Length: 193
Image (cartoon, one colour):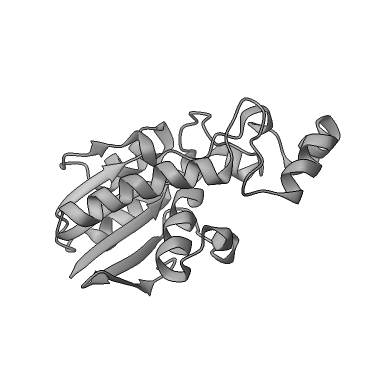
C-alpha cells in the first residue's frame, strides 16, 4: 500500500484577503504559522518516508514548521496555477479590471489560458505527470505540501477520473488529505483531517 499525505500550505495574507495568489511567492501569516505548528503535533508519529514541497515560500515554510528536522525535496511541478494577470486580485477586482477575460475564463475554465498565465489543463498536465512518477517509483508514506489547486487536481483525477471535477473538492489550509493506493487503485482515506 502507498499513502500520500497531501497538505495545503498554511494561511497567507493574500488568502485572508480572498486574492488569487497562484505563483505570487507570499509568506505565511501568523495564523498560517500557528496552523503548521498544530499539524506538526498531529503528524509526529506518522512514519513518513519522504517529504516533497512546492518551492513557493508558503509551502516551504509550512513543510519546515511541520517537519523541522527532515529533508524536504522541492518539486516545481507542484506549484499552484499561474493566474497571470489575475494574480493578487480578488474575484470582484478581476471582474472590474478584466471583465471580458473573466467571462472567457468562466466559460471554459479548463482550457482558457489566462494572459501571462496558464490554463487548468496545462497545470493538470504538469501536476499529474509528476505525481504519476512518484506513485510509480516509491512505496510507503509520502507527504506533499502544496496548494489547493494541486491537491484538487490529484483528487479529481485519481478518484473521479476527470480533472473537470476539481471544484468538487474543498481543501482547507494546513489540513491533511490522505489518498491511498492499493494495487494501483486509489481511494480517499480522509479529507481535511
